[in-house]
Image: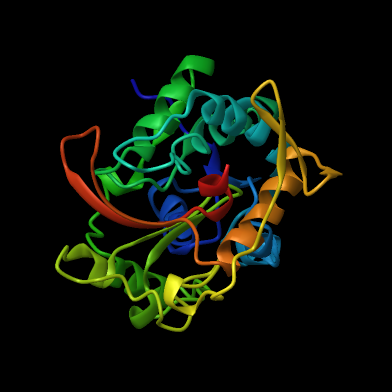
Length: 286
């Protein structure tokens, strides 16, 4: 007999996917409490107004967990030292998921939750990253993956569901790229990018967020000096910095100079191909 699910911890970003999951959980698990957890891995601007949005959509509470230092020191820097990349991709999403999943488990145990829910699609790698971490740390917890079981099949249908359930969202059908931001990168997927024949619209207003296209970058070079100790960057232009500040500063410098744009068609773990455009200015410099 399946365990009755009364309390659910949701990995929450405030984006389209996780916003509509809250009312969906209430519909499919009547009487359940939904507790949202947002892991701050560097998407600072996206945190603003998150608690109000989560509660307005039906969550009982929201945890905002600052895990930037852990993300940098335990995941970004070891990967940087290894020179790791996958098919030209600098793994920005890949190594952001385990520390978020770890914090989800900690809060689920603290709250006495029965399940953890995530908004990863059934065709991507994120579902595997989240679920392997959760099962390794808390095999007793149920995992709810709406994208594998609900009838919603596209982002347009998600928008329709949001409108029908009065879920506040910031996007429209014309600006409906799937984006993921953290300290290391910003990814763009969907819409016209689904067709490999379409060039990314780097010069379209609002597409790039961390910088500019090479065509719009200054003609004069910008020089930076980075000091490393045992493979770890510790100072920039003579100023000692912790990892979080150093990466944010390099993101600004690199972005202004059109550095770190990647247009990648990658092979996913589940056997499908996926096209993504990545902004990774600081990571590219390092």
